[in-house]
Image 1: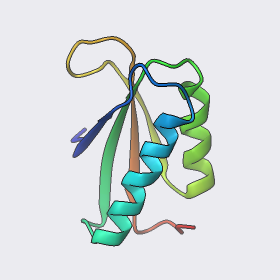
Image 2: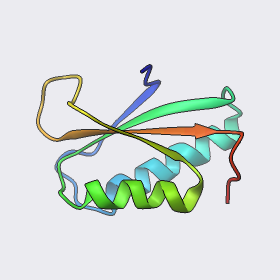
Image 3: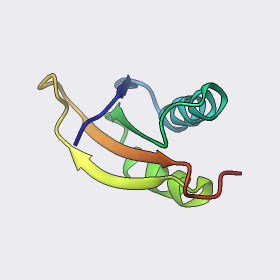
Image 4: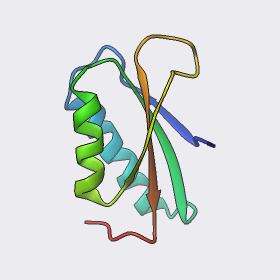
Length: 89
């Protein structure tokens, strides 16, 4: 899985990781990236395991699952795919 952007929100509580993900989606839509973009959010707040997938369902993004942080640090990496084939609100 090729993650084009990692957003490190470890040490911050929800909803900050979700807000950062929403900002990334807004930039992607505004700047016209490729037809799809894969973003990773690094978070250690337990609420992120519920909040990030829920945000994806609401915003038409595809939650791809979780991975260990690529830097070997604490927390969880949440993988999200934005795609122009889905309806964006």
